[in-house]
Image (cartoon, rainbow, N blue to C red):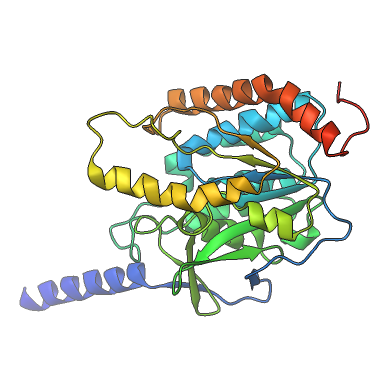
Length: 304
């Protein structure tokens, strides 16, 4: 009996250690981390920068739908965290309506592999990676029909990095690896985490790429909307996030910031409302956006 118990405990230890093993991607198609984005040729005319926000990212789909319906075409998407996930599907050739349908396939049990043995978190991230790779037609960023940049954070110094080449599902996984929730993503021995930790709304990446007009979409909580009972820890976290966002938004040509309320609840109702709020907010701003595009000479005349 003692030997049997020892074997059982040994088996549990093996499972634990294997589950906690760090993820390190070393294949030839590894995304290349860049500290600055080289200027693209030709330069993008309109860049859409999609910010981090987890479930709040459903608002991005609504914004994209409103822009598409208005005939406003963007030729670069820069995405942090959930913004990179949505941006990857756009770069693969999907429109907003198609991305909306795909999003309905990606509930928590579909894209999150929960585990007590995950490395420094409780979600491995492999299932998210598989969700992306299995639904994309192009597996490398540079092969995609539309221009795309994923933003992540290098853990060792908390500096932002940009992926514009290599395996897109690994880039999205690295961009979406929420600290202490998802396991870090290693690429050739260097670990990365959620883009939210460095650049939640990475306008600078679009500027460095040469974009002539940058539309930034911020789906984080609108400042001043926190309920009175909000903890000081949460308020401080939001303040730190805003300190990373606001300097970026200054350099955008146009900002769309849907008011999704302060709290985030990962339910179908929240997703639906966020999507609608994104669309409604973007539609309400279309006259100003069209005028700004004309003033910057992106369009000779106002878009119909």
